[in-house]
Length: 106
Image 1 (cartoon, rainbow, N blue to C red):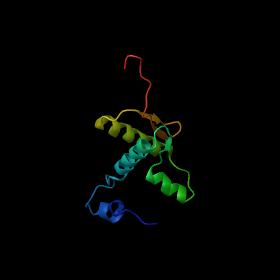
Image 2: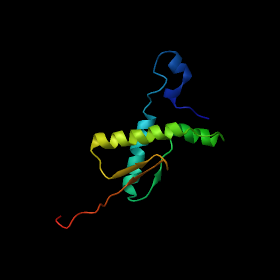
Image 3: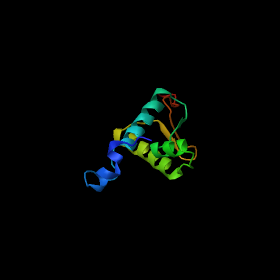
Image 4: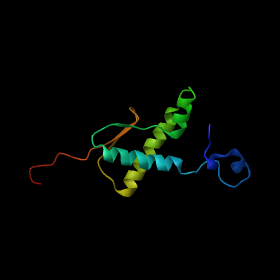
């Protein structure tokens, strides 16, 4: 299996980079937000890259990392002022509700 260069144990051991902080999870969160926006009203399954690798190896995925990725999606959406997202940790999904009910006065 290939490993991202910033995840290299040798690079971390040499003190070149911290063992994490590669930006992969942030990139994933932005990608999931964009995917949800391209498919309004559709639940988008959120799965962290670590879980995908574990799944490919036939191992049980960690639920906590998917929850942390959903939290990151929520934080990014809030910081950017994006509205209409529904974050569901029970289903490990996000959805963008592009259309909302409005009152008669609008």
